[in-house]
Image 1 (tube, protein in one colour):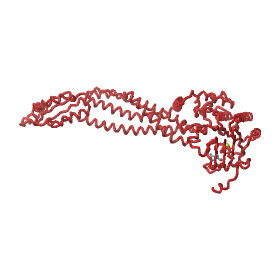
Image 2 (cartoon, chains in turn yellow, red):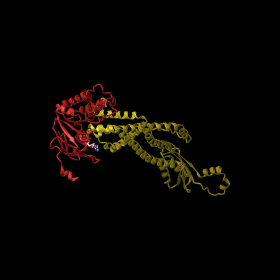
Image 3 (tube, chains in turn blue, green):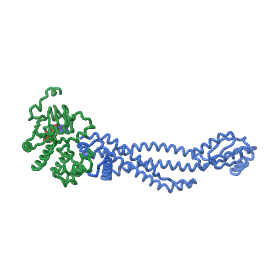
Image 4 (cartoon, protein in one colour):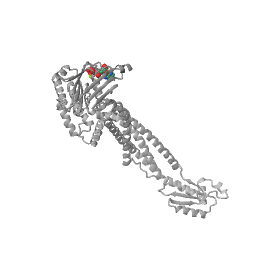
Length: 306
Length: 232
Ligand SMILES: Nc1ncnc2c1ncn2[C@@H]1O[C@H](COP(=O)(O)OP(=O)(O)OP(=O)(O)O)[C@@H](O)[C@H]1O
Ligand SMILES: [Mg+2]
């Protein structure tokens, strides 16, 4: 308090520094609170990183996903060839190959071992098929719209994605994103409650100081200021700790993730949260800390009157 | 400057500490408040400092009716009333300097000002050089003087002191009293509650005696209030 203070800004700075001092003076309690807060922040951050990474990964896979357009039985081979080149000409398609009914039957005969049984058939029951590879930049949504576009052609019976798991995976991802929002909200409330409770205890601890400050004419705002800063310090440090936890966890996961990705032929690399995300996290942490202490001071400070 | 009109104070536990007190202290006046323990001296001072509000009647200080002062104006009101508490009320985890500086800090004084005035106040109570000590490292009499320094550092127009010399040796007690008288000479209105009748008589200043919550030595000051009593 005997610091060099003159202006309003310097006074805030002084409150900021002295509130940090209070945290340092009771390290164990501070650290325990921080750990709980950091975990509460780390969980949604980890989940977010996971969802984002998975989205990148599946975006990568979907380019490799092909689809098969089954033509109607009555479509001639000449017409089929014409359609194949039309498909190939599209910008969202990187390759299109016609598998004629005869080729398909030959292949089937060879692979299935039903040769004799097939010989008994008079007509070839198989349709012509166009195997389509979407452009590598295509998103899951792009692949889907291509599929819908081709299905709408009158000559096309139906279009099947070579694997439906990507679609399913994206659905799971959608659910996961919703879980993330819910978890982040609940844990955010948790952080506010933790800070609020910590500040409440701090207020009780410093009751005498608050009383005397009010006795000599300290305003509520003056008494409140250091507690708000304490809450913000907690938020800032918890945010940093949460980031370290997530970055550490991702480092530990990087090896396994890389081998998993390469098993699926993906160039995907597990990304740690960016600096922008760190900034956002700290902002969220500070805001929650401020809000928690704001509530605690609003409830408890006015009860302390000399 | 200070005006009590038919003031009664009943504490939440039902104890009526004051009843029908009329007291007028003129600007620049210095008054002693005497009376036996439990007579209501501290209660009168608490009403002046707005640490309590009257149950009945009006207390006016610095032109403000304390019973009607909105909460947001209380801090400004308290800055204009310096208080020396019977139990010191120092912050035990802050050095002497910070304790004395508190009224200036909450009033947004500049640092140069704080430094100068805290030193001046400590000098006046004879504690210059002890700024860095914690209150518990001081004797009780020294703590009391830190409390006095804190009360006068903001140069309030009204100063009230509850037993400010209770733990001081006769010489120091006289010194503190002389300090109050010097402040009084430059216009500060002062009310001192004390048991030290010797000091009071020696000063030749006005003495207001309390007895059982009423003023007993000033005729008309504690007129009985039958109509109010009857209502209860
Ligand atoms: N906070 C309180 N709650 C309830 N009763 C109180 C409170 N403060 C004082 N009293 C009562 O009011 C009466 C007057 O108390 P007060 O403190 O004004 O006396 P005093 O004259 O200052 O005494 P002393 O000389 O011992 O300090 C006492 O009987 C006391 O029991
Ligand atoms: Mg008393």
